[in-house]
Length: 365
Image 1: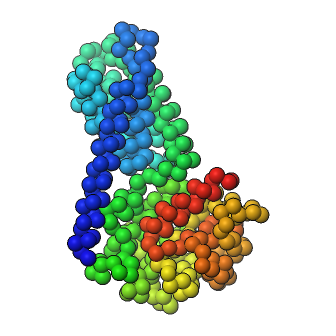
Image 2: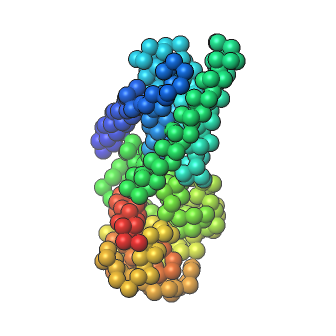
Image 3: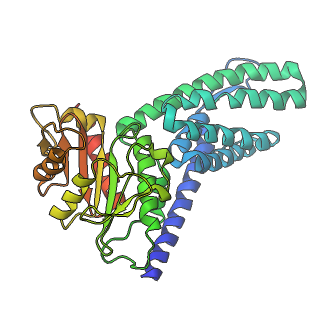
């Protein structure tokens, strides 16, 4: 089993390198060939789509991955264009742009390109002033400001298109999933420590916020390791980006605490009741997905999902009613509240159901 796990991780790492290489090539190619000459100066100024590719890389790979891809791809474009003298500073500027953009995405969503893009005109102005003097640098500043406005607007429009198309960011959770770091399930490696389960919960919590499937401390995530009889669940009233592995409460299926660093989610009994009623379920994720929430208010449900009436949050009625309306389905909508998805593994449940159903719901809302 350990050999199989190692092989999965090696295969995932190879795939990740391929993704990085492909995105690096895309950044370089769009910088080189997707360009429009500006009618200024001696014809050496261009608008190009390279910055949009930089922001897209930050969106898909996150701050660090986006920085690596953007810096290398942009520097390669300078070398191929014959502007070798600019390659070192381009590598730094574009990497910093992607780093800032990726870091701000969680809180600002569509605004980061405009903040991160400022690094480009300022950085090139300082570099050209040192090389050629302030007068030449001022001309470059003017053309770079045009490129800044063009690239930032293109990046923002790209983010909107990504959201509507359901393009999922490779947040911490997705990267962990692709590397084979998954919670233990029946038949998986029995020697895997529960740290992997806790890490998976924190990863998905971060990603759930990034993907807009909840806000603040809304929703909850749990996993039932049936082999050990331990139920891991998110703590109550803690922002997802502050939850660490040491903050995850652990309970028995009967609701007795095993580890209680914090109070568990107020929906603990809803999760426990689902695990009792559904032996095929090991993962439960409750989101406040906006489109699914709106869909629950409509008279007709085009997704064919069961809908539970309004129950008080954290109540016994909700804990029992959710299970009753869920039945044998993979998801249930909670009117006025959100949605609950269930499955065998956390990552499959999140990406296939939480994200997938929200994307489908957006088409109808």
